[in-house]
Image (cartoon, rainbow, N blue to C red; front, side, top):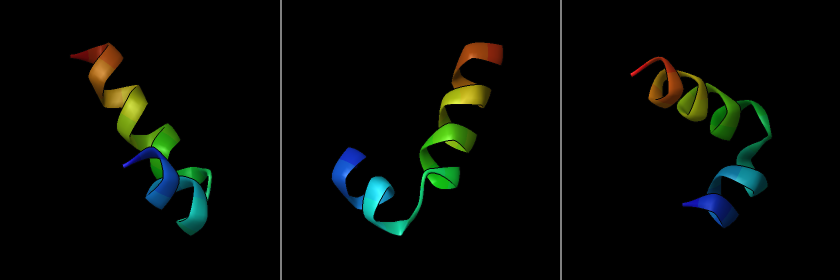
Length: 23
């Protein structure tokens, strides 16, 4: 997932990480 997200853009991984932390 990381390589795919990085390739698509840094916005994708950041958006996914934020909700995980908010959990």
